[in-house]
Image (cartoon, rainbow, N blue to C red; front, side, top):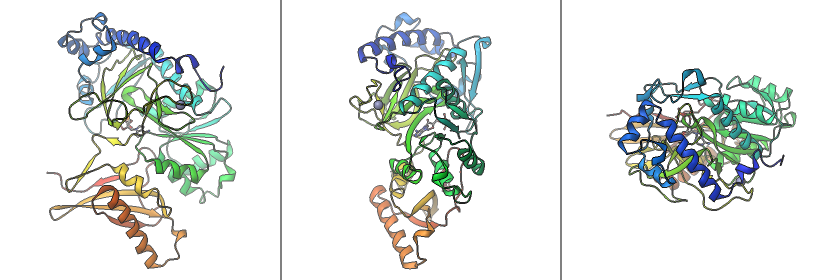
Length: 436
Ligand code: ADP
Ligand code: ZN
């Protein structure tokens, strides 16, 4: 086996052969989708009654988008395409914001998903020699089990710790010489802030790599994590509707995430009009899963905003690269009429050296206006306790933010460890404005 690839043939497939494979798999997926109540009705309406009605990849455009609401309406069995006897696992969303959604998997679906994860792990230069501590929650959330199966496939030593229990995480990292972790970026920053309390130094750890995902974060946060731990951090992207992690992952060159195009047909569309956008144009990622048999999904609107990079990658993988996810269509904030993504705020504050490992964006009303308060923890050791120095830092953060997002924030500086901590996906934004 070539140590740089898990499945060299597929990972370096030439683009023409890839298109042929995609078309073959799209036809299979359509034929499978026609077995579900939902797509049977929907595809008929657009004149697709069998896989033979798909002649080229262009025919994908005839198929309407599938949305999260469609998935909710289909709960619990409207999108099931196989006998329940053939389902080996299902994952549901939490349902805190409405009816839950469900994705079923056959044995072959799980196996294929694990193959994708194995590709991702090898692409980062990790191998069976590594000790892998999975700090993503297990259970219904796909982050835990998803990476777990792939890491076992590679033959890594897996520590299935799940999220939370920071002191134990640190102890395990030390005792078992963990070399690779899978974790949310916000929790990784928190882990760093707890090392001293646990009397553990970087020298006590053997950490080399972190796979960071499940929530939006900025390039400056990656840099900060790399510097704090002296490791390489890789961006990992996925969504439960497309299995979970393993949709796109960075290789050692860290220049965008290779999206496994033999499995995911990716389109970037204008979130308002649905119009297809070219490479390098930012829009909403839309995915068609080409291999999952238990729950086929065609043109699923992810709500995630990103673009596709032009050109190849020096690693020789031919699958195109996604940019960092800059936000979700539903997490854009409108503050006094100005559109702001939380990631823009993070990008600014995480490059300021005095800023610590946690922050919060707080919105409230002041009269008829919106007030934006950015609360940041600071490294107190960097200060002599001089008030003038603290005021100067506040002003510097405020001015940098103002330059990036146009609006004027109020900056609050907080002691390390005083803002809320999240062990899974962080909730950085608290919107206390009265909703009309
Ligand atoms: P949800 O968060 O919608 O309840 P999931 O648990 O499936 O559901 O999480 C998937 C979402 O997490 C993605 O749609 C995306 O918004 C976010 N996400 C996952 N990985 C990344 C990443 N590397 N960068 C930014 N956002 C990510
Ligand atoms: Zn690459």
